[in-house]
Picture 1 (tube, rainbow, N blue to C red):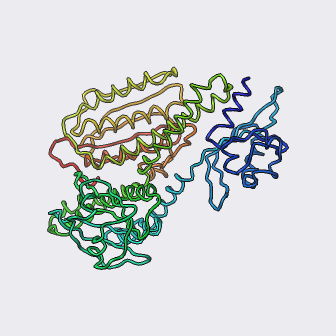
Picture 2 (cartoon, rainbow, N blue to C red):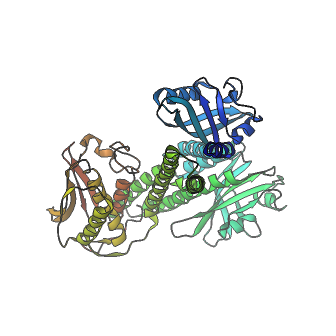
Picture 3 (tube, one colour):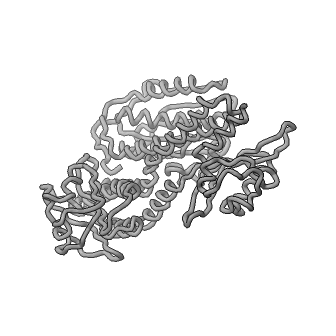
Length: 532
């Protein structure tokens, strides 16, 4: 009975599932896979060369063979072509054993991620075209890459004037070429709705006078997709528009890409405006110019890492994966064996990790837009609270030597400084986890008449030749399998320190621990760095 239920689950799952024995013959196929191939259910014990030839590729065969020979599960990405299109799958392959523990079959469970991969590859392609570009070169390269990716007839970036009555394009692309910029009135146009923060679209027919207003000619435009450009003060400063002569059957993918890059465009427009202000400053004000130059450099680092923050667009498919996995666990517990439950739980754990990564990315991205409330902060109190949480959340018994110097204070935003200390102390604990004794010290020393705080541990440390990568997002110095984390923590710390106009650096040796030093203003008379 259990086998019948399990087979019913497999055959009716939306995932692409098959079970194949060592001779290459299918014993189970999900209906979703049969439907994709246009087959009926007479598949039992047919060889993989007889049916589903699109799965009979060297990489897929090699993956199945590896699981059958090693007896180990495999998580991988697989691809095949069918009906003149490519399918991209996230695949988990599981060995199936007989009563004697001998591997006799392989079970393959795949979820299609073609849409996500297509979006991801489009983002990378567009990002590569604008990398290290600014001002006019940035805008023209972006509209060109966007238009070629979404196959629009026109794509343009428009900046709204201060009275919010007119639009002036910063870059306008039409069928293979950048064409001269235009100006037009907003009134009674679809763009008026975009400016009011309503993502706007026409998919069949535009107002008759719109193309004449834009191009002084009737271009028979049928489809319009527009998103607003919103600055760090939550004000609309422009629009990003795609126009089509033919009606659109689907607009979701196009709208997603426009939305993703609208934030980047807004940041670049603001950067350009601030850069213009810097140019106008009196050359004799060297210190002010220097501060703004540092701000621009920090902003450039943010722009380089910004594309990764679009990962929040992955939340929807992750929720689906998590939901189906949870349903399998809750509703089919008796039908699944211990190993099946393990893999479902493992899948949910991976989804949880991805959600945590997305959350970390959003925190990192939003640091630049968060205004600070500067107060005198008791860092010792924050550190003790964080250490207490680490003690309760880590069940493994360790000998602890924790020293938090009392009454350490600095001026800054309490919430951001707590995030800073949480990352540093959590890292100290994590990378000391392989020791029987965990040693952590949070203290202060005097350097050039200033307070320099430090977090010291006696964990595994790192080689200083890699120190230039410490504060870069996604740059890890240790294996993620041995040490949890997303590679975002120190990048977040770096942003917070820069936002407070402070400094941070580290000293370490392999197997001798690490010390992270940072300085913060010791008075309230300093400005929030607006470019970080």
